[in-house]
Length: 181
Image (cartoon, rainbow, N blue to C red):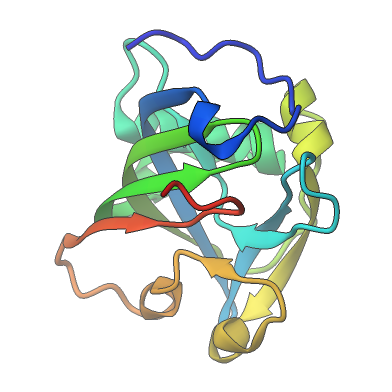
């Protein structure tokens, strides 16, 4: 896999958007009956906003678990060990259609249970994350499906309690601000 070109965040006609594929790790951070989510945006679509779990691409030589630990440190400012992560708990193939590109990811999800909530830091955010991430919130598990903005993945609530020890494969899906087709 080639690293993606730096994003321009300029709107591209839907049929001309470049495509990028990668493997990614995502982390479902849970504490006291709530999940920590990041508010993500598409700068090419002012007013767009949705909620996502922390996570991102797996660097060369990294395992899924190592990438999850790194992403928690970068996106939340929280240092954790690989042994604190449960899972993997879920897998999926996802397509994200943005105004400037299409991203296809094979995602591996872990759960990070915490005894208490904390306030994330953006000190480790990349320049792109500083532009696209618009905040964070601890959202109660029973309120995930009541949010005004979409919560992605839609099945997130099933991993906010005790994990059943099964790796769930959710197959393929699309979560897009600008649909792929």
